[in-house]
Amino acid sequence: MAAVLDAMVSFVIDTLIKMAADEVAMLYGVPDEMNKLEGKLQDLKAVLADAERRRITENAVQRWVLMLKDVMYEATDILDICIIQAEEGQESIMCAESRCFNPISFCMRNPVFTHDIGTRIKDLNKKLDSICESGAKFNFIRMEQNNQQDRGMLTHPAGKNRRGYS
Image (cartoon, rainbow, N blue to C red):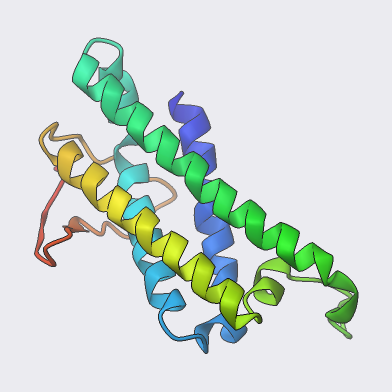
């Protein structure tokens, strides 16, 4: 299950990075929420191996992993909605030089749609805050992957930063 979650988290992170392109950066609020989401996912990804190992023998960890899995499905649903919205208008936005199409950037050009997606991402961040907070009690071991910088801090709903995982 950790391999599947790891792949899902990586997919969501990669897509979020693409969404933070210049066109999206101009939209108020959404880039901040996407950056928060990316940070939380990076933190969670670092503890997935330990969570997977411990979920076999600890029921509480099993429940935590299942909660995270449900939220990751919500994240991929949000990305799918963006892609579907963009594909409906694909003909009108093609990159002239490379003949490429970025569906995420396209779907963010509609202010009403952007607001809806921003709200969904904000709600997703709240759910991840709760998962991070409940996961802190397990003292998961961080396993850094791909030599990424150790963030070491988790942002909690109350706005306080504290060391979440060792």
